[in-house]
Amino acid sequence: MIVIPKEAPIIENLNSYYVKIERLIEHYQGEIGCGSLYFKSMASEGILFFDKDEILNGVFAHKNEEIKGPNAIKSLITSSETTNYTLSVHQLRSDDIYFWSTIPDSKRIYQDLSTEFTELEGLIKKMKTEGLIGFIEVSVGDGKGSGLVFFNTGEITGGSYTWGRGDSNRSIEDQNKLIQLTKEFGGSFHVSRIPLEENGKPESAAAEIEAEEVDDGPSERIITAMEEMIAIFERTVNGLKSIDADFATLLSRKFVEKADRYPFLDPFVAEFKYANGKITFEGQTMDKEFTEGILGSLLELAEEIDTSNKSIRSGPAFSNHFKNNLVTWMKKYKKEVKQYAIQL
Image: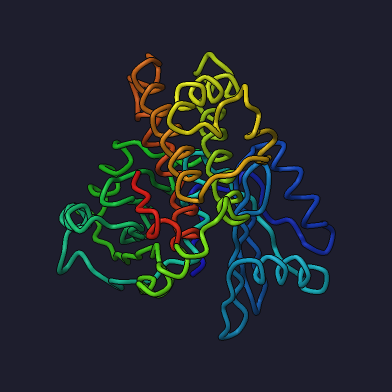
């Protein structure tokens, strides 16, 4: 599913014939940090989402075929050498980018709803009640605008609006404006859900037992999962720019506190190290304890940041920012989320 930001792009009408895609993305990673690159030609279109470190996801539609993920990223970059695409770049908030990167995996659950039969305000309340992880696309009648409203487990966590600024906006005033415009001019809505599990099917009990039997880790997958989670936490801290202590200091202090329960985290033992987005581990512990120790440390640290930082307290809680940024991670590691009962 190709959904592009509603705000005006920061640059548009670039011709792919004159552009190296990797270098263009690298440039805007440095300039804006997080964003999307939209490709449009006569026969195909696609979009790539990136943060300051990497391309997170993509979707490529050509004729009647749509591909997602690494294959879409590769296809868009490769085809840009021979296809005359028009390119546009949107800036996206660091708080929103991980949500945007899951949109290609979303599935429509309601399509072509109309203000003749339902009101947007009522639809938003319904999605809150249903605990939607996904979004509502809104087209206002008479071409008066359009918008997206993002949900994470029923909580509105952001949005994108045609009248918004270049970095996307999430204010309640924009949501209210969108509701009011649909009341005045009518409109149509689509609702999409982002599944946390492939095809909505839970892992089998047999798979869980098998995984438990061979859990003599920490396995490479668990180490990778935890270093990605810590990296997301670090980017969330850095993105807010209002926390006095540096991330490495905060993490080390918390690991010292947890060392009695999880000795492998003790910085003075030096079995566990995290630097530059990577974990180095030279000790022995089970996957379950490894996951519990790191996750517990991060969640406690998030709560402490909420209560100690005055500027955070006056706005959305840091812990909410962190949890929203983990939507992609939860989907990628759905088996581990289920197996170790990871709750945020």
